[in-house]
Length: 212
Image 1 (cartoon, one colour):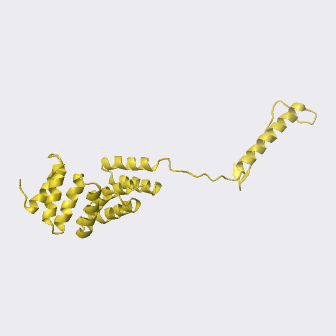
Image 2: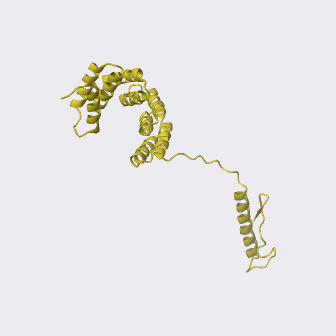
Image 3: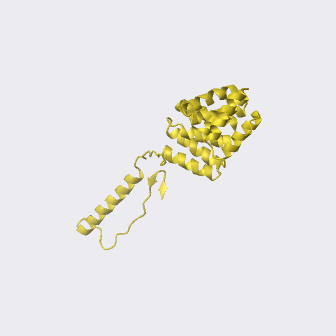
């Protein structure tokens, strides 16, 4: 037992030897016992060492785990992993885009906007972040700024139907139906009929009054 940081040792009975200075076996046993006690005391009183623990998961692994949680419908767990991934690698924009996507799925438009803007600070040329930011801006009736971002996204990837469709909606919401129709038709040409995006584009064309 310990008391005030010191070791209280019980009395030991050494069998097989009789105490006395002329007994070599006794002297050897006493020496060994003394060494054992000394090692125990030194170990118990040694200066504590500081141990630094590091996260065993990399930013990529954190991000992948977030994707898995997101696919499972575990939004809060996904958000946490994306936050950790973004903190682990402060130059990587994808975790912040994914973080914004989860918030957008929850219709947390302001939080999604913040995540996408954070991603664009890390990578100002990411068209996915531009497109998604434009989408959530339109959900907040910030249509003029949304149009600015969709124009940039389409300029970088003109063949992406998702970007063209978002651009069409931004044009439509800023009272430019003719250009919106062009953007929608461009997106429609690259979109399979069974895709949910196809229906989304058709809704935009219906609002303009375009029919096959």
